[in-house]
Amino acid sequence: MNKTVLLLILLLLPLSSKAQITLQEDFSDGNYTDNPAWTGDFGSFAINGNYQLQTKNDEATTCYLSTPFAINKIETWNFFAKINNPTTQNNYLRFYFLSNRENPNNTIGYYVQIGGSKKDIQICEQTSGKSNTVLSVKNNCFSEDSLPAYGFIFNIKLQLIGNKLSLYYKNYTHPDFDFLGSCNIKPQYTEGGFLSVQIKHTKPNGYNYFFDNLYCEGEYEKPKTDNDTTDTPQPYTDSDITDLVINEVMYDPDENGQEYVELYNLGETTLMLDGMSITNKDTKGNLRKGNIFPENSFLPPHSYATLCRNADSLRITHQLTSSHIVYSTTWTRALPNGKGEVFLLDIDGNVVDSMQYNDNMHHIMLTQTKGVSLERINPLLSSYEPSTWHSAAKDADYATPSSKNSQYIDIDNETDEKTVWLETESFSPDNDGYEDLLQVHYNLPDIGFTANITVFTPTGLPIAKITANDLLSKEGTLFWDGRTSNNSLVPIGVYVLFCDFTNATKGSSIRKKLPFAVVSR
Image (cartoon, rainbow, N blue to C red):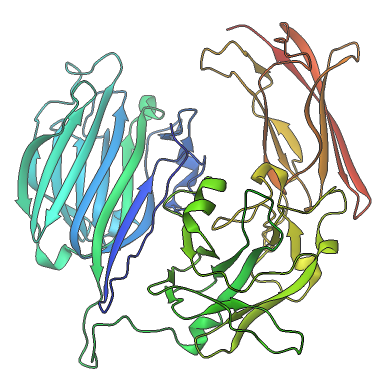
């Protein structure tokens, strides 16, 4: 499965308060707490080895996850699901596509249900905790008699134009969607605020529900008020603009890269960046005319946006998707190598945020700093403190434009007691698709650690090096494919992983031995 692609793109039309919004989630980043941020019953779900959302319950329960998605015009929803048991009154999957609350148990809106007492597909209206079926199709299709050996595997597509909702279905063996029927949606419910997946199951079926490849798109049009004098989106206020911070700076790119500056929006509203600029000072200490954000630039809340010379090239270099917000501009104001300053200016030339940089702010163990960005370890920390900034990690290819920083530290949470551990204590590198890689997870007490991780035989002979003096992010996962230093496959047996983490800046180190086995399946 491809890497997770999440889109939250507001294509603000010129002289209009309309925005095209698209959301795509395939869970291949391995989490559902960020990009997009889901809320709900985290303990009831996991991302499985196929990067699908899967239930993981040992008891009967009803569980859900929700994410915000505000639309009110021309809407389409599409998702994949798999159910490995016959559906009943207590075994079904619901997808809330128009919902005014995060918790589907007390929301008002509409959902599509697969399964239930009729073992069918239903479109239902929900108000005050009560449901009313407005469309029912494929009766008894999800029964025990109909259950294939591989389970029920299917895609659902919904399309709403005006008040008319059309339902489409595609099963595992059919390449195209089939139209199943349509119904009318009450006008007061056509504006959605949340998307939710809710699953109810009995005890034997706690691991039998899968959800993936969610794709939604729609249009949001800001309602007019009596005070509206134009269709142009409203600009930010002074209080809004203080939520913008400089979050990452690439001032000395390598031959394949380019200079860029990343911003982060700390606030709760989408901010227009039109006319704002990135600049520095001349030799007399005066602010220069800077690199200007293009027309219709924006930054949603709690999101990242990067300004550079060539957005397409930056996407290719750093393997960014269309979900990453990147803007091109005429990059007339270069960032000096070695040391310098970066200023973010509003449309009137006032300083919104600024930072100073120099090569000495990079990690002491780096042999060169070319091609390594400086990341802000937390947007809430002061821009002016050198300790706020840190070299991007090697496992992020030393740069994270338009993404969460590799050296991000949650200053509100305590560090997990675990430092380094294995996903499983055995693996079988036979390329059969099951546990082919040894996964080494780490959660270090601070940023700035380098790692040497070596595989030893029980007699103490080193046979493979997973990482050597590499600068790591604070937490992450390393992989070993079972090949030794001479590129041969490791024999079946018991081995020891020796992990040595060193923070030269703070003079601390962590060492740990982890035994594991190489087995055949």
